[in-house]
Image (cartoon, helix red, strand yellow):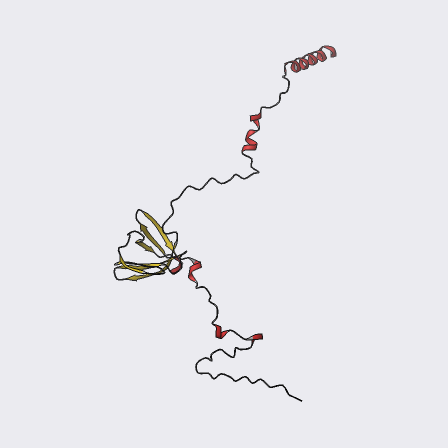
Length: 189
């Protein structure tokens, strides 16, 4: 009885081995997704869409005041020091290093037209001014870098002398008398 059972198992196993296929090398595309979309490498960011330069990009907000009939907005140029634009309901005033133009109609070439002013919840630093220039529009806000004036060097007369001593050539503040500094002469023997 043991012989027929053993022979049935042996025949079944040998038939299964004979039917099984030989192992094959996997196709190259099988693992292609792993090196194309690896979770361990970062992909470069897609290029940013080309946005037309906003005419307001070079300007920062200098001040906003309510006046009769609307707002007076002062814009300061970020790159050209001394260049500014004041937009009023009756016209625009452009100030450059060498000239002042007045009475320009808002929205003409080189100027902006005020659309609206929005006050933020954070106080005067959160004011947004919406402007248009031709068919393009944009928003101008206060810029932290332009809010504080740049420090200037002290005047020549107010600089301290050597080793922290007061400068004897400096003018005395008004109402004060200048102290006379006496330097003893060396004793001759």
